[in-house]
Image (tube, rainbow, N blue to C red; front, side, top):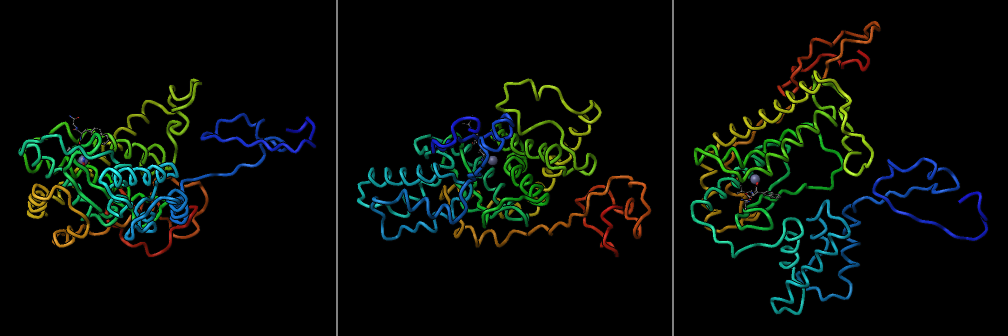
Length: 362
Ligand code: NHX
Ligand code: ZN
């Protein structure tokens, strides 16, 4: 640090997950003056990390670390180390001398969702509910153009879940669009909607899907500025809440009227996603039945085995999202034709193509 003897040749390195709440004095030149962002690894990073952890371990001939790297977007270095370790343990337990590709694939699922619990005895009736639920996620996800492709579906309990549908992005992604989030919402509710449709009732099982969908919808409105009514504003200090000892976060930075609007917009997003999932499943009811039967029989189905069945799903038309126009202008003379008022508010319906590019400052 400056102010002390600068000739000692000591370099001080520190790590934090919360650079945003450090005392700015710590970050001044001469102190901790360089910040190196260490993000989750991208594809190339994952390949390199896997190689490091596989060093000295007997990999089977079929083991392909590049495929594993492609299958693990979002994994941290620690997750990848854990993956190799789990794969080694699984192989040893099965009496193999080498780590096979199958062991690594199983290890991926273990890291994501926990170990399989094959011993849990499920009645046929509950098994069928689970099959419909997972079938619902899969079919809704497949029908929606912006949802990630389904990689694997299973009704074998794993970790806390009785069944699961694994989707994988086709590449590393750092941005998610509003259209993608809307499709993700419908997919998250696809399990619950399938229960409604097929058993004429529904279970407690969808609790996690529902809470994730609600959280996503709320983030869309309060963090990402994705509601036309509320506009591109932040409501609440989401990011800084969990670790703060200080009294931030308790007092909302918006009025009760705005709180009411937020709730209404969140509800509208969730309702819309629910209805879209319902429409998809009603239109593809026969495929849902077929997939549920397939799951009852095979319990876990992989992408390749799903292809023929999913080819029968009627896809939803792709959605065009128009600019969110809700301001009333800035008093400046319009630079072209005014577009305010010509664009309707709910931005999820198809847009009538504007003849002129909307002026940025209109
Ligand atoms: C229970 N579990 O709690 C039983 C054991 C609807 C077919 N009485 O949505 O397994 O009901 O698509 C992370 C991951 C709670 C946190 C999963 C918290 C699951 C999972 C509840 C499938 N798959 N629900 C799903 C499920 C349940 C739960 C979780 C979680 C079911 C569903 C759990
Ligand atoms: Zn679910």
